[in-house]
Length: 449
Image (cartoon, rainbow, N blue to C red; front, side, top):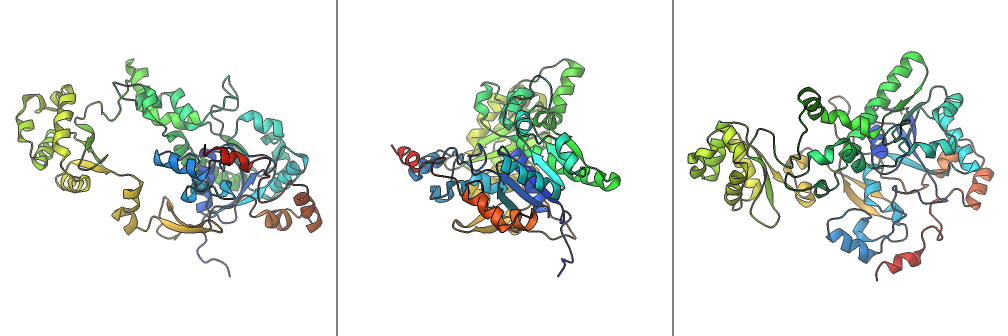
């Protein structure tokens, strides 16, 4: 029976050869709204920065790493178990609603299967260094001859040409190159203190999904596909347009701002009651500053001549922030957040993951949803980013285990016979796990020492 209210991208099939977060985030968004996304991933070698199979930690090491707050390599219950590549939190966070086929595009048999797949898809999305796609012989000029309606989204760090073409980079490298790390550094520190934000990857997911859907509309008009080039650096750079224009128009080089604002003061994060508990404040006007002092009971700050104007508060910002930190540390952050909001002061509690999962706002809206992965269990996932008035939507399927959908893709979609498929499996080219040689268990054991 046909769905009476189908999702907008139902009927669109997408192949992806993606790593890390930027590329997978694009396909996450498209899959959530109905696209059939097929991950093309090898079992003949471990694809770096994908499922985490190249850096498997033991349960003990994973637990110790998690205790430091580091997420890299984290597994369900900190346990790599028998198939750590299916238990990786980074991969599973963005791979719901997708399918997986084992296919090594660098081998003749894998490339043949991949080209058959290209005949059947509307879109190919990849975010590898350009030379990888060139070596595989699957550039757009080749693939469009097989499928003229194909839309190919390419997401290199810096572009498909130019002197930086084959520089490999994550979102954090791109952000460093275009100045984001500098801007969000602290005035009395250095950019290395800003940590990893991967804002470029996050923005790329939404921008890439927008580009693909726009190209699908263009194909509806013309009947032909096209290549979309969306470098991480160039997709993120417009977000810094304000500072770029200030330089080109006024010759000013922006300085690191940390939590500060160019004109607002106070504008920072302040300690509250308990260990590592904080609240963020942003005061833009004299009226807001008076309301802040009324709630905190700091009449002396209102009487201080240094703080009676916005210009004065900004000039003496360090002293103001120190005084406010003394005033906020006796408050519970959520209590202070609600009182300040009621008084017309922009404020927000700084939450960790545990507090976030208990958010009355997110839970009231049903944002978090549960998914069950066979052999791994049921866990809570962030839900879908948008709600549509006339198109109800929820997470549908859990992240795929590697090669989980091999048979339905090779046999049902690509037309391989049972004998041909079984031969690929027997030769170790298709399957649902890596070999012991690729992820040796003895290496796991050494990590406990």
